[in-house]
Image (cartoon, rainbow, N blue to C red; front, top):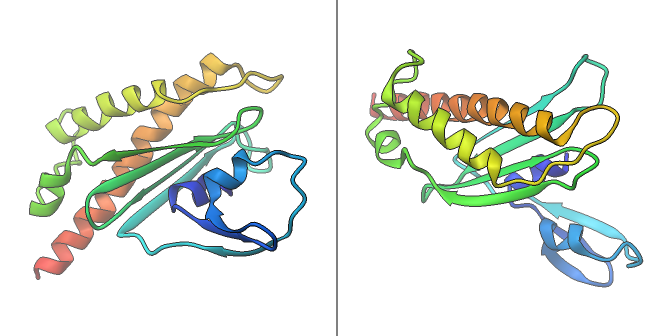
Length: 168
């Protein structure tokens, strides 16, 4: 849940400390005693979430959440225990194609898909992964690149569908 809320740039309200970003809340000392009273999520153009699990009832090995703002900023969050979820904010490399509605995502060999594939690997390298009995950090990093690519393709398909729908 934290991964998705980080991607959506959620704000939390604490009884004593007031409003703060979720990332700041996560960074608070565990000794801080306060009550969470409210959570606000800003409206986004599009967002996707995926949790990679070995079985349907299992805890996720890695979670991925991506949201896109109207100005083309992407908030990409990855996380799973034992590491803490983190978020990267970046400019959409396919923003022009999204605006024009010319995203070719059908073929794995298309330029858009190749850009997404390369970018997903680069993004996966920016995060820190933990090792425990369930999976190693190396395995999680490999899976993260695949999950990031799948989530980015889903996001761009959603944006492409909206662009095509708006042009009619």
